[in-house]
Amino acid sequence: MNSGRFTKFFEKFASKATQATGSSSAFLLALLTIVIWLITGPIFGYSDTWQLIINTGTTIVTFLMVFLIQKSQNKDSLAMQIKLNELLAVNRKASNRLLNVEDLTEAELHALHRFFGELAEKAKTEASLSESHSVEEAEEIHNDKVEVLHERQAARKAERLANKQKKEAEKKASGKTPPTGKKP
Image 1 (tube, rainbow, N blue to C red):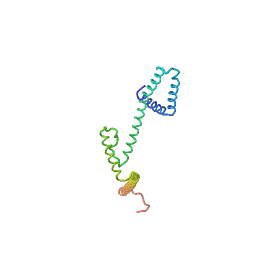
Image 2: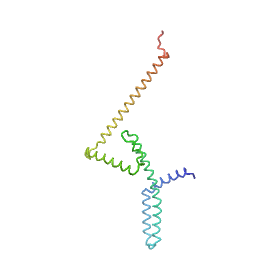
Image 3: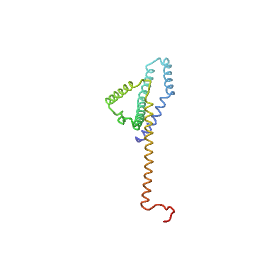
Image 4: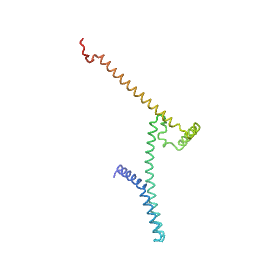
């Protein structure tokens, strides 16, 4: 099996296994296993083998789940970063320097955290915590976007009109004007 097919197979397996192990049924199955193990304790005299069975089983499951959960977390984290990068990239007021911020060093991240902490402190002094100016700012940004959209539409319309007039002028200048029905 080549690595591409194996990767696709593992992706599907990991996704399904993560969904299955995160379900209520999986929890109930684990709980039932523990209850059965507890009930069998007196039958086996709480022997070392009886204890070893649950220890070995839980260790194996935990070991495998660590990797499965990490795979799922990596995928979810990457998807979240892509979504956040998209939001930053399309927001004209957001800094594009924050794209792929997850690739910065820990010291750089701490510096950014302090910077945004200072901004948060400044915001606290501007208004009470019960007030929010984000709605007004969002409305202002929306109005700005609508205004830019209307300006672009007007510019395109003017450009189309100018191109049409230019073509008509070129036709007239070349003598290829359509007959008007009047005889000379």
